[in-house]
Amino acid sequence: MLEDRNKELINECNHLKERLYQYENEKAEREVVVRQLQQELADTLKKQSMSEASLEVSSRYRISLEDETQDLKKKLAQIRSQLQEAEDRHTEATQCVVKMQDHLQKLETENSKLKVTIKKQTGKIEQLQKNLLSANLMQQKLEN
Image (cartoon, rainbow, N blue to C red):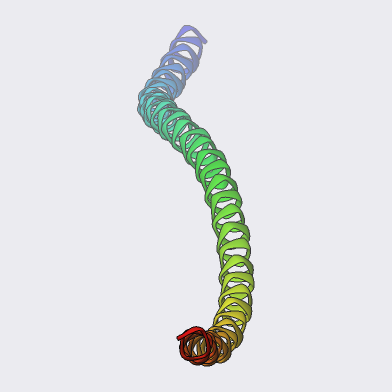
């Protein structure tokens, strides 16, 4: 009976040793899994940190591009305004040139008319001077 009890205890001891060995193996496997998960977590956190940094850089770049876009829009509006002013001045200058040409044409026409009038008057003056000279000569002849 003691032998039987001893065998049972030995069997139970062996069984407990096997279970202990299994538990130690499972513990070692779990530790490996925990290390892998910790490494994955560390890698994921590193990737997240890099992604956040990249997002920050992208965000700053986007803001910079938006600012630059606004500046360029302002410059474009200013240039368009300057272009409109230049076009308005050009239109005014063109209208002024047309008026000046019209005025010049009128002056040239008036000048031509005045030249004709001067010629006629010069002819009349010469004729009157000749007539006066003739009259003076006749008067002198009559007086003599």
